[in-house]
Length: 194
Picture (cartoon, rainbow, N blue to C red):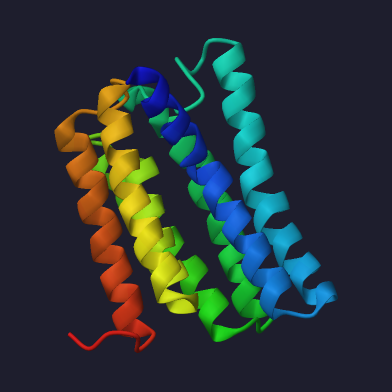
């Protein structure tokens, strides 16, 4: 079962699922030049630096593992990730990109910031919170695939506990943060009426 959990955890890693979603949506709905520019901005300026940071720090022993599963080690991760996403969010707003894109990235920034704050108390699962949020974004494009993504987020939750990367409490915190930010974003964008 651990092997299956590991495969699910790898496939469901936010550093894989979110860039894949960005590429599919950008190149599926935008002209190629704009899709390439936005993809480069989001992936090249946020995800690639994060992957490099996590790889280097896990190889030199600063991080116990690539997932930055240690609560105290996550502090430096957040201190790197949040400013990167903040800069990209500001660039998107200043360059007058589509409202949906700006709002989606803004709420991802809010999710990451809330996770950073809660890290003082509990190490919430970013795998879970970010994939729940991603499910809500997918839902706005195709609700059937969004439901499948949400169910997959459930499998990711199971895998994180099974692998010992998170406790049930940490997964529940990630779930709560992901659901809360998703509902607020969907309400803000007019997709739900609560």
